[in-house]
Figure 1: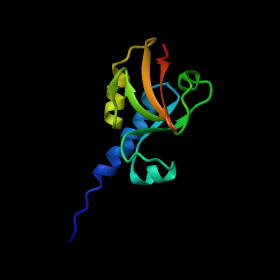
Figure 2: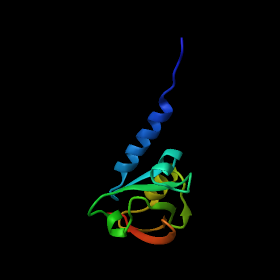
Figure 3: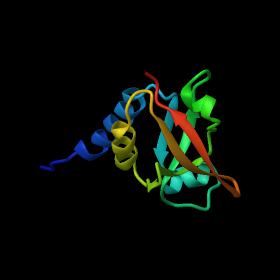
Figure 4: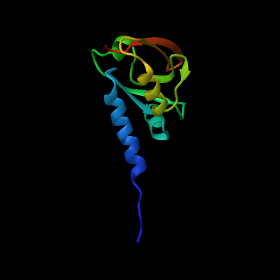
Length: 116
């Protein structure tokens, strides 16, 4: 008889789904894994990548694009979905947050307004 534990992957998938639905930023963020790094041809092997930006959303208005690497939120390093979620959830509606991103060879700051 063999016991199999499947809770770990399920929790990660639930966290991703909750992360996408918990904010109205129009932003889909994934942790960088070897598979993700290969798919997007990244040098990084850890951190967060933006994989989706909805049209007519706060993320699009901020100038975020799929493929951007998210480095910081409000000058705090962010390297996991958990950190991302905590930092976004600390922000109040109507507040503007500062994002540091890497886009190809350029690092830039963008501001993103949390919808009211």
